[in-house]
Length: 114
Length: 113
Image 1 (cartoon, rainbow over the protein chains, first blue to last red):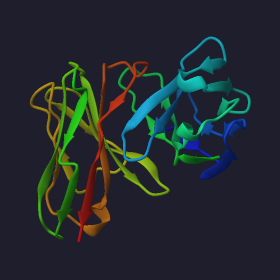
Image 2 (tube, rainbow over the protein chains, first blue to last red):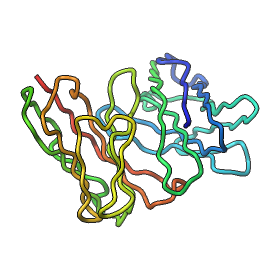
Image 3 (cartoon, rainbow over the protein chains, first blue to last red):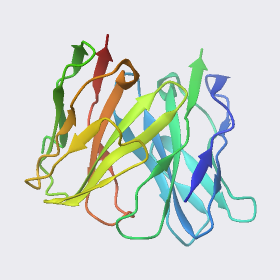
């Protein structure tokens, strides 16, 4: 089984500042890693995913994440945030079986203020 | 494509009542799943299905039933609602491989009094 720990429940940041949302995972097998975003009163949508290859993954809306196998981490970063990035961000992990299910972290609320 | 649709958007039940949350997708996805989202708990998997006629339990299946008679629909049934089932429920679907994007519906906010 896999598990995900999102170390911060809330991250307040000013507009145009950089941000990093932290995610650590635990698994006894190789994994795939995902970040999803949930805007207020909406469902989740995929930001980016790491499947294999380059450990730096670029996603939508200027976000990127880096897979670090030795530290079992998959932190999400953006160099300059906008007010519109205010949302809840979920890290998720799965094993590599075809019918695998996603295990989500508890989420990090990113609060961007002017 | 409408994507993943869920009805109703809001529902209030009394303890002991039953109801069905509807989920439909028009993307011909084999894999469908139900999650519940509670404050500070993230999303937890209730049930999932890898195709018509095939369902399996997730992390928190107690109190919920599912069936999958068609590829498009995956209803979630609460047989006897309890206050602990107050939550926001999300349906999701994807083409089978885990590497493919999972699409989420807009959610159903359920309150059980």
